[in-house]
Length: 200
Image 1: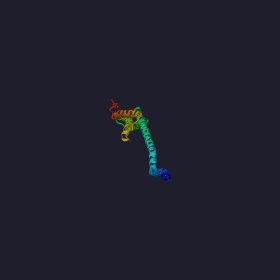
Image 2: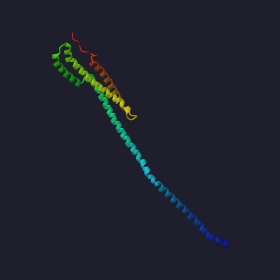
Image 3: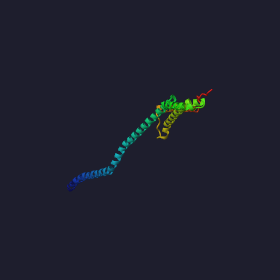
Image 4: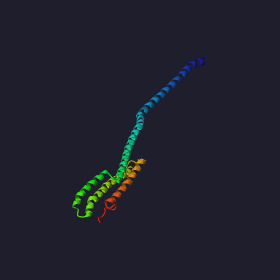
């Protein structure tokens, strides 16, 4: 009888001890969670920086694309100008015709004092022909140099940049026209091709 009476008061104490231990463990877990949260809080700026990196990369890519587009437009325009100069030089430019007519007028004035027939021919026709060949030869040389510059420019620029196919084709056409003009007008200037006629 006495043993049962003494055992009953201890039973509630054991039951109340278990909830207290559970509350203590929950409090410790909450403290660990708060400590972990405060420890991870300074890492937020790093995530913000990592989110800004794609924007910076996109801006750099856009600037690079803009530079490539401007370079492409300049190369295309230069190639067209070079081909035009080469074609105009071979067909005869207005500038060379004006210089030739002026030189013909000067030759007519000088031919009055010419002592021989060959001197008259040189003054009336030879000087004008030579000046025409010189002006057209200069235009052909400019076309050739400009076309070579367009073709060689990607080699001195950023790696990986290439010219469009049509720009390369127009540049090579300008090189051919310029080289042909330089050859023909050089031979005409030095009287190797179509020399002046000789008096009988």
